[in-house]
Image 1: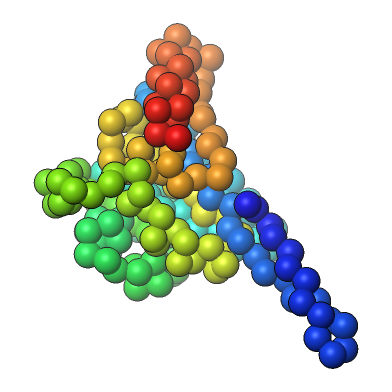
Image 2 (image 1 turned 135 degrees about the horizontal axis):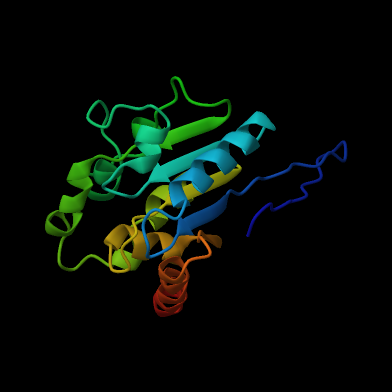
Length: 189
């Protein structure tokens, strides 16, 4: 995936470029290791360089939402994206964010996701529809995951991502979280 170039030659020999987002899940099964810090700051740096970035906050703790200065209870967000068939365009927050960065915010009610989903839902495919709908609208889509291996949003992020960025500190618990994350990624994929 990544950047795809499709050549369509018209009568004048021009070329059309079709862009496809690079989807990056940022994770580790241990909290406090810099997942949100990495997602937000890498997106902000890319935004300053002219790239269009979307961050989807998939953690009920709403770290990316709070880190970007967005009030958790002010906007609908990830919960509605995954349960109410709302589109990313309807939910994206654009105001007061770094240049080139957009956000789908989270709030604590995201922890109710399991009870709101049908028992027949394929949790590995929850993010496919919304991500595929905007793949041409953003250069990079960052999925900031919860520090829980079994969290539905983490499983869905690992399933849909093109790349997975695992954050860790040189500490036994943080490194142990990497091992768990590798196992979870292998299981999901």
